[in-house]
Image 1 (cartoon, helix red, strand yellow):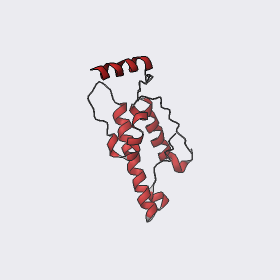
Image 2 (spheres, rainbow, N blue to C red):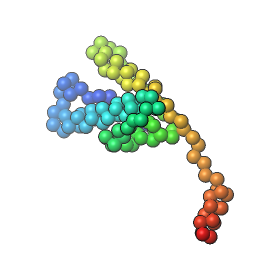
Image 3 (cartoon, rainbow, N blue to C red):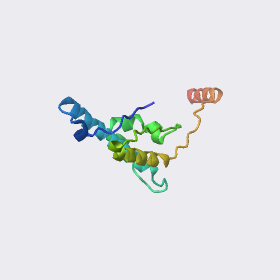
Image 4 (cartoon, rainbow, N blue to C red):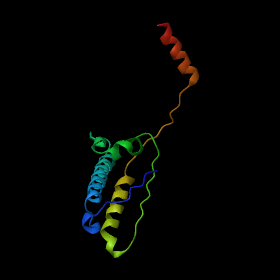
Length: 124
């Protein structure tokens, strides 16, 4: 479970010092996440690069975003006039995420077959 608390509007929060630096880092990570989602949501037949390495957040979420897992997204909105623009941004992000297609498979190891393969390797 990952809680992405939303973008930090520096002008709105009037952050300074250490909080300002933290807000910049949060915005950078969320921007990188948006780029990854945009790349994953595009047509898979076209050759593309997924920029997972652009941030620690996208590296951590790599298997969940485009990997071998089921992923759910919950978008929370606070529908007041002051947050109208941020609500639209959140809904646009959720819409892009909706277009990502993962194909999870069960990771199953047959113990008997792996034991046989190990014996063959030992004999050769």
